[in-house]
Each structure stands twice: as C-alpha cells, then as structure tokens.
Length: 153
Image 1 (cartoon, one colour):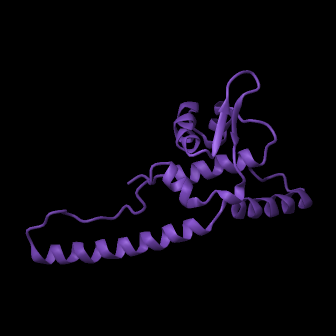
Image 2: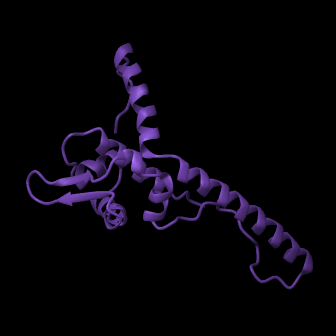
C-alpha cells in the first residue's frame, strides 16, 4: 500500500515559504516536492480556506504564509489536507460472521483508535515554529561547516 505523504508534503512546502521573503509560485513549489503544480494548488487550497496561506496572481505572484508559524499546528495541517488515513492496517473483513474474527476486529479497532487519539494530541502540540527552529539550527550548522552536499529542494 502506498503511503499518503500529504501532511509531509505540505510541511515541506510551508517551511520553504517561511524561509523566503517572496511568494513562491506553484511551479517552484512543485519542483521542490517533485510533483505537478496542479497538485500543489489542490493541496494548498485546503490551507487557503483555513487562512493559513494565500496566493496572488501575476508576474510577482505566488503562495505565501498568512499567519505566524507559532499559530499553526500539525493538527491544523492534518485537518486542512483532509485528515488522511493514519494507519494502513485494517480488518480483513469489516462484517465478519466468525466470532473469532469479530474479536480480532474489536481489539485492532480499539488499539488504532487509542493510537490515533495519542497521535492527534501530539500533532496539536507541535507548531510549524517548532519544526522551523530545528530546520534553522541544522541549516546554520551546514553553513558553518560549508558542507555543500545538503539538499534544499
């Protein structure tokens, strides 16, 4: 099963936006993500509806953050991209006739609900500012070491 990387993709894009003084075009963001500009626009539209990003058209247009990094949590990003499924595992049969399979489904379902609740709670405690500070520290260390092998795309 293919992993859903929407949350990771959006975080990547938002951190690039935070690091720039200029709006970034869908084309530029798509190159950073290794995808098509239409995917970028579709992905960022949920964030625009929530007031996290904005876009302007024209020669100097593009996407830009519209709020402070400390005000945006991973939970908000997760919700803005449509709350993708967190776990790929699931029941073999959603409506089993077998009592053993029914017991297995209940146990797995309960465990997933607990794990998802913990993960969402953690997402609510992490801001983009937290992630950006980690990125900034790493970037400063790279610049200080003059290691040119670091990828910023």
